[in-house]
Length: 218
Image (tube, rainbow, N blue to C red; front, side, top):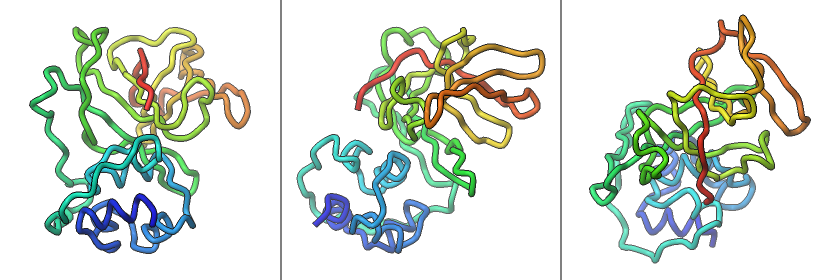
């Protein structure tokens, strides 16, 4: 029995109910449980909240928690209106964790609304305004950034050449790349995989650019 199936059953959820809560379909849940579909970081982030675990558990990076009594069946709120967790009282200075999910035929990443979790704000961000953390999804920045790492982001620090950045386009597509330079009409970014290359995002496409200032291993 897979860890995901054990966690689903411990939470008292059917495949159909878990699919509803995670915004996917029952066949996709079945494929993930039977190994027909690989458990990726974006799937782990999407499924962790309804299963009541950290994404690293689903990725096999942390042991699964002990089995608990079945939870009461939950009703899924409408998409994009799903209630987000509140900062835990035990965390003195919480920082929101954001996530991106794949979407569309071109497999671009899109930033999800609201936080998916909260972590303690590191000392070097104590005085920063609106910092957040974000899970790495995909392998385009390996070996610099690896899937499941948690990036610490300062949205108000201007990027310097060589900085890691989170770029959000007007379409809400999100890129985690290396900042190379600014042009009169856009910015030049770099990615490492599958080929080391530079490319341009025009100002007409650009919404925001935030600087990565640290990271946390899974």
